Image 1 (cartoon, rainbow, N blue to C red):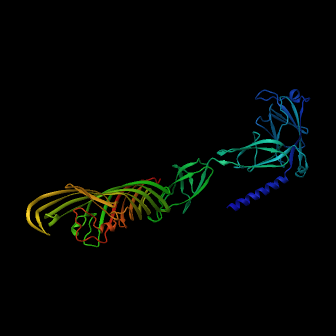
Image 2: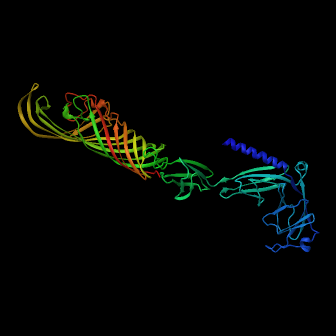
Image 3: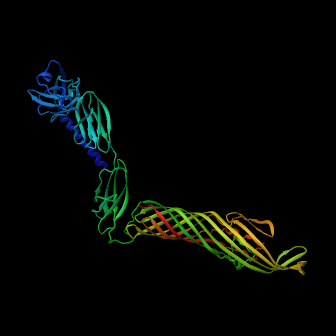
Length: 577
């Protein structure tokens, strides 16, 4: 396309050069003030009707016939043909006059004398062939001005002049001149030239203050085109000049699904669009294309239903707290799980109805675990003098709260159901970073038994019975910390442990699947998050953990894993249209 345009420009330049060589020229050989000639004042005076003053008379002496005369903004009041002369009456103060004749370049002449009221001037017009022009010593020189657009108006020294096919070419008085090129909805261009011994050329390409676009439709043309709700034509459509800005464009045709889009018109730019529309007869799922922006942003919010699961290769799978049983009585049973999520969404069309979705979500969830049990005939305290033996029951509640940032990345295919309605099937993954994970522990321990006199390693006689000896335990545990501790009301000292690893990992990942229904940007949907990583640090859970009753049990857990899968019920809004 660029090669064709360059070739066309070269051809036009050659043709113009040939045309210049073939054209003859006119020149003002002499311009004289005739003070003794009283024709304009006495013999044949002509009055300017606008100001009521006598006109000046320009007596043009030439052998050319049928010359076309044009004056500056003051105009020509009267023109008369005489023997060998043409009389031109012009108003007082006139500044220039132009001559045009077939086969000759136009001549634009600035008067060298002041044009006074009622004065006669003699202008001798001489004509030259192209060959003679090359050697002649003239008072004029050629000025060539190319302009784009072709229909622009050209002003030389403030006077509008004729142009042809985007070119102004004329012989002009030597010296300095001004030019100005204007066109509707274009930025004007102006300059100054100094005509002396050589041809002067200028090229004025005006910058458009508007934009345009054309629109083609597939598989057929003839779709009605509406811009901002008003029908402007049918496809293939080429717009007129449009103010820069965003326009809503709609394409519609009987038995086809309409398509809406937004076109951004930019200053001095022409844009081309091709849109594929789908007929009613085409497949529901694969051929309709969802309308709206290519890149959209939105917000989401929803309710979380977490499902916390743990597993172990040993006899049991417990929590971060060691209750000293070391068997299946310590198995966790998380309950009362709930939460919420809020986030931002970015939606990018990859191809037709295939999209890439990314975002950032803030997630909050909470859940509980309850532990209770009893130790029978348990030695729960001993010193050198006595031993406490009896039944020791316990009842604890673990309250978990977790805050995290989630970054999902999903592919989404859209099934278009109606003009603005669509069903989205989403699949991808997510990365989760834990901001906070807290375990708040509350519980009691109740002891019933006897204080025995100690004889070696065996209990002796009963010293006194113990009935309903109760202790209350408290702990606020940071599951991302290596330091864990608790306190009891019967012991003012805090018991703490320092582990090599924290109970939980901050960074986790998994898969995310979902289905969404969207109508005019409003969304409702459900997601399932399946964690793939092990959020638990096995080193902690397979160790002694935090022994709340200062008992570690006979066996430890092995191959410990903890994951949180969740269901999300979400609402959202996306700026698609």
